[in-house]
Image 1 (tube, rainbow, N blue to C red):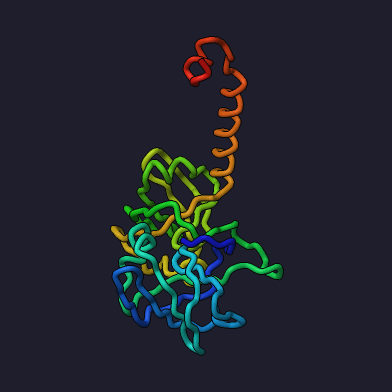
Image 2 (cartoon, one colour):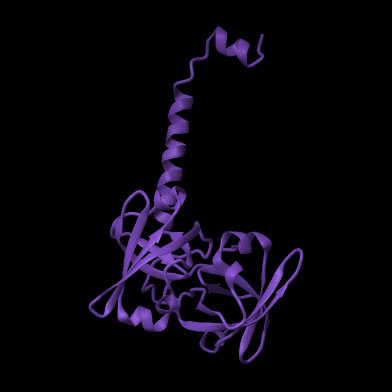
Length: 224
């Protein structure tokens, strides 16, 4: 959750392990043990960690370190991390990246709570309770990032949405380790947010066009 232009696809590259957490008053640091995402990665690059965009402040052959601001801890499930916790990891996209998921910014919209897990064949249905602010952007068959994993919405109402998770995703992300009651980081497809913004701007423009410049308007705005 930082002010850069890095983007991700929601295709998790690797599961990392929290090696250390250093909590401070103004910020905290986490050290993540990993392997694949360190390839061609350098200081200052971004890693999507459980859906949250973090900047690498230190790196070696087997781990990276990143600062986590208090706001990020408060508004994400990173606050629940412990030494030994598993996290989904993805490097930011490059011009050579294949966009197999959907565009993910790493700036989450909120936290959801897993309220049900139901096996179906060799897959899994995950039901998640979310706030109204998040649910308003979620549509049936639309995309959603859950802990940094790009998934397709299979059901949604005014309180809950569901996703069907295939075996490959279960095996290659931390979602298989989730249990009922756990929280997940949620980022909605940004297309919906852009549409909402355009509609707001359109309404504002229309309202301005409807302003009547008369004596009452001029008095109200201090002209006489």
